[in-house]
Image (cartoon, rainbow, N blue to C red; front, side):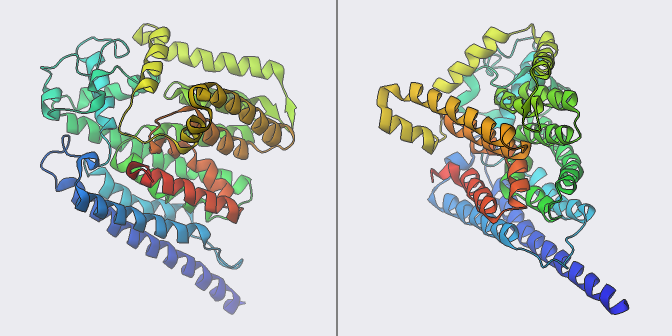
Length: 430
């Protein structure tokens, strides 16, 4: 009996050693990114978008190292007798990587700067962020700290009203420095990420997936880099997706609708998740759908009230943002539609998206009771088909559902690696 227990303990220690080996490699790579981030003459005027060939090649090699390390983690399958590390060990393992990335100034994107500038215009200058551009107060000390700024400084706020409210405290606390406000916001995102891991693990247990599935979510390099290093707000959508899925599995559809509403009030595409709280065991509940829609609408109204209910302005701003020709490369799927349908590509994209979305609902919620597959396919389809110049960090919201599916299927694991690759290397146009 003792020998059997020792064998199980040895197997468990083997899994733990592999976890720490993965963490050691990732931590070294995080350190290399931190060195690149700090080794710049200006944190706002010199980002990865202005790197020369040598710096871009170095960055590409670091990202390739992250991807290869993660691919081994996704594709490795432990023997049945081998116990993966507990969720506490996983959190303890990911914290060092997060801390290194947190203390580093944003490297590959300046979007976090846009977040706090938008909130500052509202909090300190009384300007509606959906009406006025970010550089509406050129003499503001934060604008002077930025230098020449970025291409989006002449645009109004691009995200939902809840996100503007969430940014306000960090603007007040970090009023002396734009970099301090960004750090405070990144710490907030870090807290949300750590809080999401135990909830994600509960979903893993409820679905009877291997415990290693939690590692696939917590260790995703694209999630860590986009959220912890560059401070993108997609962690809010990832957390809301996890909580909505968890509530749906506990048959608390009202709370699930609330989380969909909160996510929608940050980035509007999250509303596509609403059907998963309306269907149950292959059955459509019409009254539930009406109530769930009312919950989402109420969230939008409540979060918009402090900003004067700027719904028309928000919609106009969203349309303007889609007409930009920013530095991000067009999504390959949309580029393919443009090449095939030419001037009629927008109509073709709309029809294909609606048909695809309806088919996803039919296959994952009507024929099968699989809200996880619905969350994965609906968000991936909408992102790749409707947002022409989306930033690759948008995929952060897809990674929780992708990790759950990768935990039970090697095919989905390969798909998760492919999405992670695209999210990491989208900047390079590949």
